[in-house]
Image (tube, rainbow, N blue to C red; front, side, top):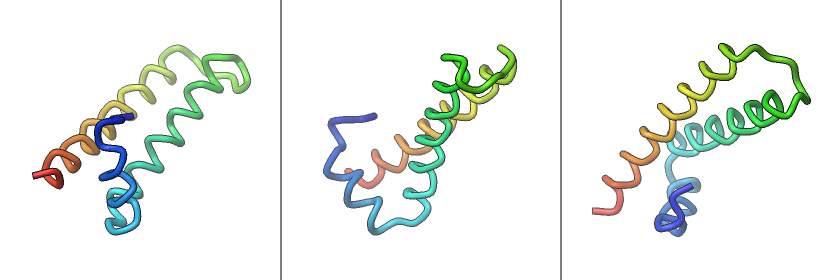
Length: 71
């Protein structure tokens, strides 16, 4: 996610607890979605779609923090 901000992400994960929390939640949702899509964990299409929307909202918030911190 956002390879152009790799160094900044590393920095923010160690200095900004809110950013770290968002980043970890995003990664956890990504794992959950993959497990559901591959059948490791059962889920309906509606549940998967809701989780994808939540993940996208987290990604948007992470991106906004990155853009503000990069200035």
